[in-house]
Image 1 (cartoon, protein in one colour):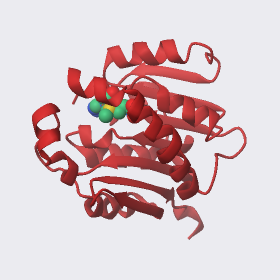
Image 2: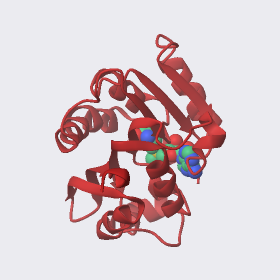
Image 3: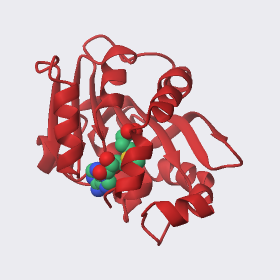
Length: 209
Ligand SMILES: C[S@@+](CC[C@H](N)C(=O)[O-])C[C@H]1O[C@@H](n2cnc3c(N)ncnc32)[C@H](O)[C@@H]1O
């Protein structure tokens, strides 16, 4: 589900960017155990205006990022923001639940997958987790920063923003879903009474068991 005009303004505000840059990204780097391996490939779902994509390149040190968003306006903004990195970023207007359609992504393609506050926008959110797990290499990291049902139930969110009404997840629901897709949580925490969830999970290597 796309963001409405008010949410676009809030998400792209300087305050949100400062939170992302100075608090969320350092916390996610710690939870993930550091940057990607040298030459690492990442996929980012719901990249919005590409601010997080720059963090993935600069702070998580990905060599290549495939980034997508359902909203053509957001992808146009991301193209503008990332115009100086044409060799390291591919951008697509696409749905996060089908990375084959977006990037022809085979199973076990990426070293890391990033979700900066997008999965709560997807009605079938479990399908997007399954798709992330499919494209991660064994040992690859799923790095997430999510908005939970607790936040979405608050008056500000209900009055100002549009989100799927059904099958919303709490932090516990989200964390409980990951092992069903071979993703083992390596670290996670919530902030503001469970409103926001930050964490990382490693794709298990079933072949080595
Ligand atoms: C809250 S915004 C976060 C944007 C960006 N990650 C950031 O942190 O600034 C959620 C984004 O997810 C996108 N989105 C919603 N549903 C999507 C889907 N099914 N597939 C891909 N992107 C989606 C929206 O267009 C929006 O840009």
